[in-house]
Image (tube, rainbow, N blue to C red; front, side):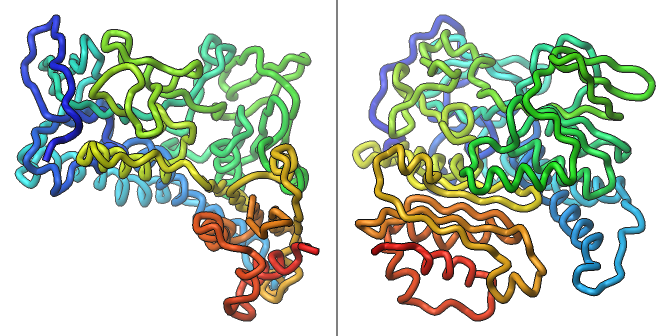
Length: 475
């Protein structure tokens, strides 16, 4: 079974120490490509950091472990509305760090690397130096201190992304943190300045404030700006009740002294904190791989340019997936792209496109947010005759049980067809509740039937979805 369609032999200007059927750059989603179907293929995995990539080590998984602790702490502090006298009397920060990393994440990462290096996968070699292209499908990398030049018939670039640091902060020389190290602080800071207003910023703002840190947020515009307007405005109001939000300002510099960090803004003011977190977006790592040496084209925003099947548009035998090439920097998208690329490597006559339809996302802040599809503004701009419904959690029985006053569901549907165009949840269990509507969109179900042709358990929280569906006006 061929890995893919035949490709030209590499033009090598460098002596090659080893040649493989397949080289995979990155051990995040790319590490899931090798399986039983590829046992007869020689494979190299290149990973300069910890096995498992961003999601396992410094992203999705550890952050949600912190978020859960924060959710419990915040719920405890707000328990008075349920008639409970409860308080959080202390936070064992070092205990949380140990639970997340020493007891869970670090052993998994180490075990993943040991597995790929061990006898269980004898067809796989692991290289742990940074890799750069030196020719067509040819890389310079290494193991330990030993440098190697390797090549392959096929290469999958799954090298991920990294935090973007604004020049004003990078040039200041102050000590700043990103998602890559903020969770391993030796002590819980008394105060924290966060520069940024997206997913990462909002999740860490929730974590640290709930655990007792005073949080200040500096945003160039507003918080979570892409949200549908009916969620955006209330979320920003709620955030301002918990955090000091300085919106509409640019950072021009930063200073550090024995008391912490002072971030200077373009209006002459400053925001002070014991620690500084920079969460201003992420950049694909393709620019660190010397792609030009292999003739690999990139998009204007720096992603490896691929066609709809994940193939490089300019370099035969090269594929890419995940943050390094995808328009969606989301782990579930990287995993789905990995499955498509793996299939395409194995079945060159039956290529599958990258699965970019109905991509959902969630922000594990407080209140939790989950979205899929278009906002109302986008749906109207696309020319749809829309019907919308804004449903409060507090209008259903389980919302009463929670004494919820802020949860919202907004649905957008196409009036003539009953097709769901967008779903937006803000409140408890948002990332779980939205899954039913992801299914509706994926299978193109008519929401007029979805609302009435199935049972909705009473008085469970999904009744908020049921009521939102029933509230859509198709007359």
